[in-house]
Length: 557
Image (cartoon, rainbow, N blue to C red; front, side, top):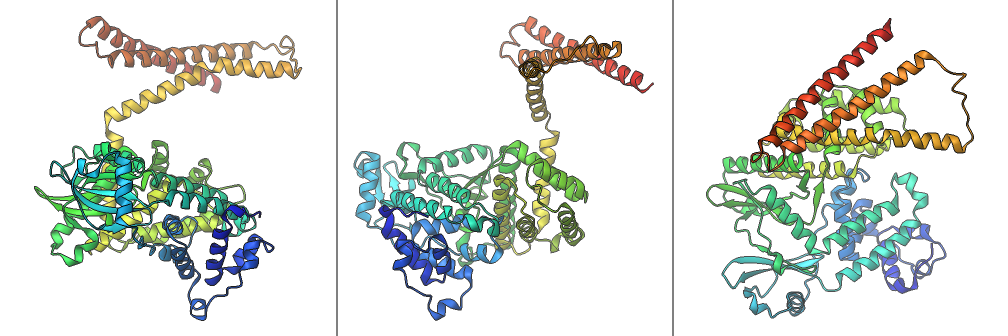
């Protein structure tokens, strides 16, 4: 591995810290002859040697600073590649970093606002209320009296993170011989981390996420998403409404009765499934520090910090539903088939061993009563199973699984009698609503018809391409010698059915567009044309079905 001398000092610092915490063998693996390695002669202290690898890695990340604290926090969500001991330790990483001077923060604020802060704010707290690895947070008040919080990015943090990522990419290239052993692709993992870190460095992303969540809950009375002042938000600062309430992380120091806790848990679970099942866009870090109880015309739950968001598309959600249903039915073959179709398992996987372990999981958890079940335990078991069998689920599902674990942990911490039944009931509610919603199903059908229509009209071009390839390869067939009345008849029937299918799709799509037109109420002729199109579609559809059944009946004779 070649080392860039531009970052030699940082290489030296990383190597020194890693060696002092007992990871010298990894440093040596990268390049035994590297300058950074030769400079290092540190060995771990005796008290360090007594700690586990997970504890030592967490302490090393803390010493290496903001970039590695953030990387550790991201890795703590990757239960698909790290074991429980490592996840638990990395989850302890907190943004308890040194605060940077207020004068520097105010200069950044005014540079981003492009005006004196007094032109916008009546008051800004003299000291930050929180200091994280990427930003500091201040309380403030606008000139109109509205209370807000200001998040100001740490000076120079972008350059620090980019430099560390560059180093990590070079180091990852030296991990090629570890990839099989660790069951990860280090370079791909670093690239994922880079994308997430760079997004968190741009507060405009957080603003977009917050605004989208606010739109999702615009008609919900018991969920609060703080208003974000986009006119005062830039890449390095974000200004949002201050939430006046009780942070769940401080709940032990306040009096909140059990019934209120139960209400908040119900709101949180319902809100989560609304985000996932209805919108495919969800807050991916619902830990107690990001949730507030607000008493305002009743009990409400408020979300803050929108830097970590999960997105799940309808196709992946459908796959998840299929896996859940197959698991409920104990249909192991279907589970394996779904995993194969989604490229989650490779050809090298022992499918018999895979089925055996799935069967064990089902028999262990299937008959347990709800009050004894733990979603976290089940998902953790699934993640261990994935690591063992090298199953690679879509990143979306991994994020979703981690979020469910966090949600359950937060819920149990708030309300001790929390049951998996709460999550199951909410899931079933939204699953049924999605399946039985006529408008949504019609929209999906319309979308599928469009897709099938364009696939059908592309068939002639595909046939033409095939014939062109055959012609270029000088593959000649004497059709005259192969002439068969039965073959000709089948081709004619097939061509007729394809033509009618295209006409059917065209009629349905055209009629749907006509009936969805804004002018349908003004002009009756347009309405009658749309209805006539559906009647024609019905006739063509019945005829097509009759022809197919007739051909199948004759084929059986």
